[in-house]
Image (cartoon, rainbow, N blue to C red):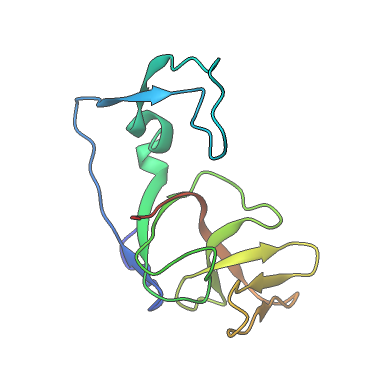
Length: 147
């Protein structure tokens, strides 16, 4: 992420670095039933590299921590967002966005109506006018939340 980019008070940069080693964890592709498990389910273990899955392009990936609640209940304070700067923001995606060179904020993009949506109804949406300059720093692709 470029230096000098200002995040608003709802976001905090969460830096990371990648070393030479790749860490694999056990992954059960068949998943786990939230209802009644099937006795026929076979727990076939595979290996999954979390950095390859979530940080596949480190030069175009950054992490931010949610500090505000304008995107609640989708995003919670303390969530870590994995943001990809090499992805184009599509309709209904969540992005890190600046309007007219203001601080970057996290909002849902409504391409059809030209609105940045705060999922929390207590916050106002941001209408995008034709003359506005919009800069999307990246698209939120994953989140990490402690339970």
